[in-house]
Length: 296
Image (tube, rainbow, N blue to C red; front, side, top):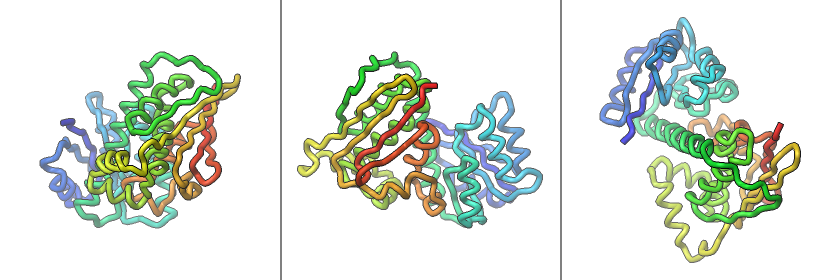
């Protein structure tokens, strides 16, 4: 089992003690800081290597927003997921945090289950992204044949194709993360019909992958495939992903929505559009998406 190094930043000692108690016995190694400047000092120490930061928003000396901005502006720390714990939960304040790069939120006060659910979601995303980045960066590029089409039906096939196709692009690691999100979406929400609310509940119960496997073997889903194809020009590579589902209301997932900031899922499409592609466009009822990567 992995041990995750977590930096917890809060000016209230009681809050630090509560989080430490909640996470005791789990696969976590905790370091605490009492304000943003203290946290920045610990982040920048030569031997520090944190996987996750749990960050209070309102603190003296340096508040959480300033620390967040510093982290996201520094390549050494930009990819560390940050969970913002705050009593400041208005849509405007959440939108400010999302714009600065904080995609995970907890509203004070919260229960242990909510904390663990968001931590697990953030670490699951981190684990997947690290795997995709490392593997895609080592794969040899595939032949850039125009209008090549691939079919897939499982999560494993989706991730393997994402890494393979990302090798065509200037930054395979970033492209693989976005492609994986879109291909997995075609399987789970498209072909298998798992709704946003259902995935939320499954993630909270740590039962999402088991439900995927169960639905893959249902008679009504037998033989259902999704496809991904690409075309290449001198300036860009265009990926087209199509599933056999009934579509979804894709418009509300293209941007980070403050109303979903506290859920353990629902960030994938927006993150793909922001991190991996120069353009992302859904067509028809949402069963087809076109993602563009510029080559220069």
